[in-house]
Length: 199
Image 1 (cartoon, rainbow, N blue to C red):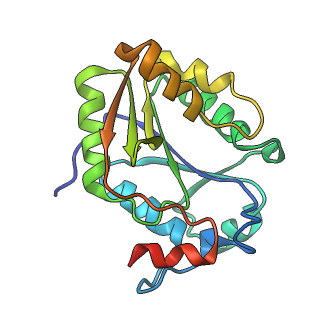
Image 2: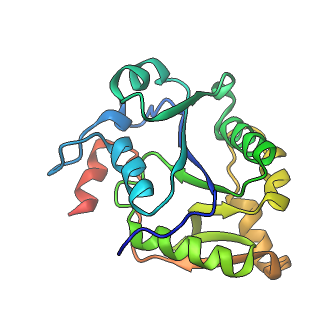
């Protein structure tokens, strides 16, 4: 599928965690059958989907990522990354709100993220301008797009809690504020054994 315009969507690729369950820097690990690191694949998939305003939010592995990735990859160090994923979401939301742009949140370890799904998310978002989230196996997960007026939800998060619980509740209590785009498979790489799930 050819690139589609992103309408200045601000993209945050989250990569600040320590990845303690993996036992190393999974973001720079090269998936089986590929030649580039995992996080580069995620970023390149976003670019191929027509998303150009992409920032990698780093933390524990900041220096390693800064040294390994090309200068063309925009990186932002989350100073309080130790406080959990909410710190990255707070920072990304503040920067997107200041720019007056909707925010697409992607995870740096989603090994099988594909352009087709991102195209669907963006297309659905521009039709309704509401929170547009991924649903996989009944679970609401990133990638997810937040319109500017919903960014305060991310700014209010604390600790190691993402937006999942809020969005799950919203589906029931305020369905007019959210829409879901289904995907059959989306694999998080949490430990080395997870690579086999891509087969």
